[in-house]
Image 1 (cartoon, one colour):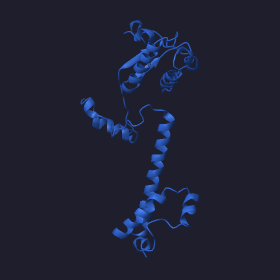
Image 2: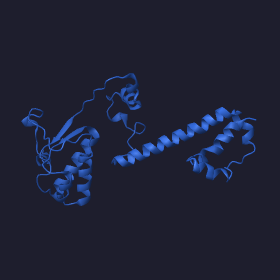
Image 3: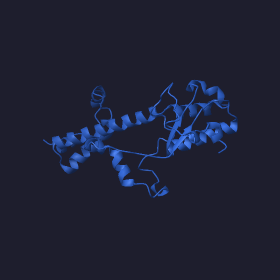
Image 4: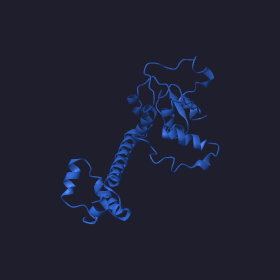
Length: 212
């Protein structure tokens, strides 16, 4: 007997007795795909191993998508729908689309290749030194939000992030700014950037950037 012949004995919906079994094995997602795969097995006369391979492939893909959704949620991305699939490549035709797509696959890790990326850099020195007006807070948020999409940011501050909130007139905006700035790849508390790394004429207080 093949999976195709077995599918003839099953309805398009999963038999009720299978549902608790699938949930016990944490395979509840198969409830959505099993009827489709049974029909496919019948149409293509698949063997048991081929049928099982389809089911396992569906489950692996479902778990990978769920894990990705969880990571995106924890990352608190402002624009979580920004993917290669809906990215507007016409915005900058000079972008090396083929190379960027190759990097996204992570294949360079398998090939043990080294990757060097560079981009424009924004430096906010002495961030959160004084209270911001409503206009300044709005401008600062727009500046930081735009830069996080386009390049890198270095922030130096004498205050820890939790002390930034009272400096903003809008607590929601303060939360968004603090989250965007402090949720960074690297944080070095107590280690301010030195003039040997940033030239004096490159150091610009955040308040002056609002009027630059």
